[in-house]
Length: 275
Length: 259
Image (tube, rainbow over all chains, first blue to last red; front, side, top):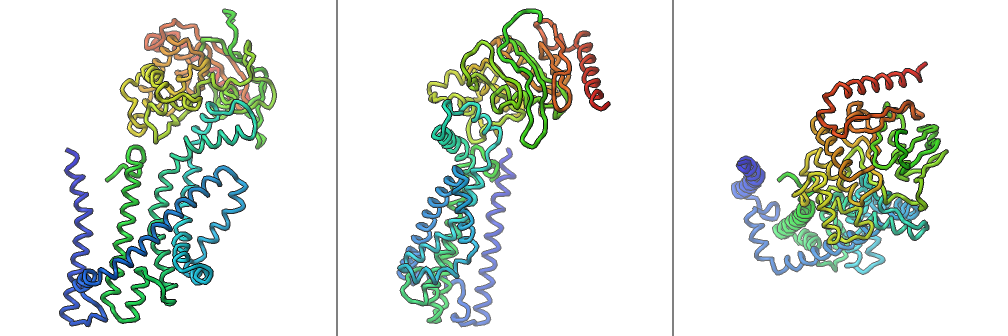
């Protein structure tokens, strides 16, 4: 009974932006055709679509390279960010000594670091490092926030029921580890997943930025390199085709992260309640 | 005292001064006897919750002694059930897993605990809700889960810190009646913090009225009601008289510090 209006909103949420996009593309196509804009100034959407198909052998290879860098960078960022957040939550001393550097790394624009990395590292390692640097921080800071957002009452209950029966350093560490596993880990999940949704997009940006910085050096093979190359050769339809593929990659990755988040939180978290 | 029952827990001239210099309690003496329900009643900020935390061993007294007479072991934390003002449930775990938590921390597997979990859920009237998540429960039901969790270790002493304060009055009376039934069936010893005069009279064997900060025992009122409490007692003449007397005591306590 209550499904009717809900489904109506859902289809509106899908149909409205779809309609806007189709009309914008149609207007674009119409303008290019009637004004006879040459394709090296502005290619029509139909031409871009055809270019994606005809240039697919070249573009698909580049897409695979960029996608691989993005996912690997993300994976390392998740591993490193979560591990560091956990260490921070176990030891104040480590947090105080290292956190400022994590912030410094985040606020320095990656585009400015990329040329340096390209000097000191082989190109694919440098590109990967850039993707990792930008994706790392949202994971770290969100996981830290999540690990700290445990109900105080629950911590007191753990102090009551889970207190070490023998005093000592090891026993204290053990009880901290238990609190980490039983309380902080699940409590941090929503914030971590929000960080992940930001990090997937940033990882792609990091990969593209590094490829572009490396691009002029000429040894790249990723999508961003393809875009720069097409620009030099005035192959504007291919430039648009590369851009389109990048956009779809970003949307797809964000969508996957969102689905993962919904699946993991759907039973208990407010954010996964609606839709 | 009418009957010489050995106290299960004693607070002997306990004082508590917090790190920020606030004196929460001074010279607080109380014996809790097996099987009784003592409620602590007083103006907000008088140190009622501090008394519970001291009893639970969650903090240490600044002066005086908190001890279990007739027991040689030092650490009694596993013999205590604690119910907070808020249900403080883990939102990511279902009802059964929330109740399992104290047992899990003591190394009891979920399988071995399942019978005890079922038992505790039926004690609080939540049969069939084992798989529900806290989000899906009403305020009263969440409080029942919290109570079941406090009972799961078969505590010798149940400490309750204004547990029903956030509930509406109808739900509150229902839970009060259920608590009285639990106390009778399990022979539980309960210390109950409240700021409701009605609640303290309808539940308690003894009401301890506390003075404003630093809290101390201002008055002790015995409630010698029939074992059958419930609605019959709450509508009786003696219930009204007791509520009026305690209101008067509270008023005297409040003005006493102002002069």
